[in-house]
Amino acid sequence: MDLWLLRCDFSHTLVSSYKLVCYYTNWAQYRKDGARFMPDKIDPCLCTHLIFAYANITEDHELTSLEKEDEEMYKKFNNLKSKNTKLKTLLSIGGWSFGTTRFTNMVATTDSRATFIRSAVSFLRQFGFDGLDVDWQYPGFRESPAEDRNRFTVLLKELRAAIEDEAHNEDKGKLLLTAAVAAYKEVIDNAYNISAISQCLDFISVRTFDFHGHWEKVTGHNSPLFLGPTDKGKFIFYNIDFALKYWRQQGAAAEKLLVGFPTYGRTFTLSSSGNAVGAPVTGAGQVGLFTREPGLVAYYETCVFLKTATLKVIPEQKVPYAFKGSQWIGYDNQQSYKFKTQWLINNKFGGAMVWSLDFDDFSGTRCKEGVYPLINALKSLLNITGCPAPVTTVHPANTSQVPVTMVTTFSRVVDAGVWCRGKSQGMFADPIDRSKFYICAAGMTRHEMCPQELIFDENCHCCNWP
Image (cartoon, rainbow, N blue to C red; front, side, top):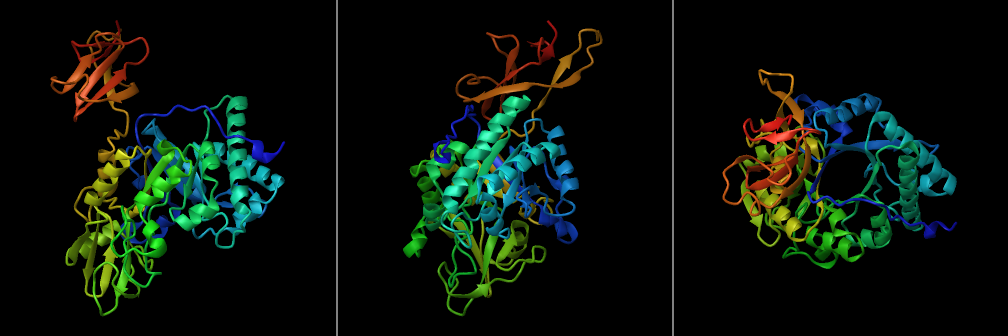
């Protein structure tokens, strides 16, 4: 059978809520002092999906762990699901430092792809992941030959077919298949058969950051929402608005596209002539005290810089920057997240992808804005509820009516103006179906279901036996 006749159509149900997909980086374990980040630092109720970055590919084309400590961290990472039954976890393969050679070798033949796919499905099941995320940077670029564009599409089609078969034959829940992709037009045009790969993937995380950085000769923002006043040439395409709409125009389903939100900034060292956007630079800014990476600072490092810096906003691009002496940072804050999220909602995209958990102020001690101030702001803006809330129920044999905590099955969130209009905050029985009830709170109406065989009892505002 011709591989190009394979289709990636698969049955799925589109959920109405947004996705908030957050990356965990396994190299953050090597940072010093309070910046060291391990799975136990992750709030399991913060994101809808967690992605562990990164895994490795052996010379024999099999999926394997990258660091010697990873397999132990996989267990802790996936154990987070015991605290949030709605949470999904994925394992990512690739990244910038991974390069392209191992991908190129793996996709080269039918046999090498089949070896990878068999090992990937087995590896994911062994360690309790819910899916695979492919972050190839980029098919047909760097050292990757042009034919890798088509081979990447074939790989995703074959992965999708294998996932469908495995779920059917083993009577298991279906693994997720996702990808992190480029936001640069010149890469998009040459690396992806967008319409074909969109059919194969459950969601697509567009890496809408690193649009500008110290590799350039002038200052520019890391993740601008719109076209900037100094953008010329190819840089007129280097913004979130263009990238996401271009992916959609080329055939990607809008509800599958996730907007990339960075929790880090890009830094420059200014030359002696100016400090505005487009000012000339001599190279990267000073490295962060904890991240120690040229041209990059975590949000918690940026907060320290902002205490004594001059703060500005690029009005056309809805993002902030700051400078002090020769140092210049283009970064994101809660206000820029608000602009970007409203744009995301207006354009009906599927949600947000965050790079990464360890760059936010996860301890809440440096920015004094609470723990995970950026990601929590994003979660709130997207109206994501996080962990299922416990509902008090009463056991029929318990005559003293001591409450027992059980978890409900959530059905949906509806507009506050529909059912809760005119009602105070609280829990109310569904007048049509006694097994269901409404919660009116925080400007939303939540329609929920009691555990099996129980009904909502307005006397105790709990799920009770009939």
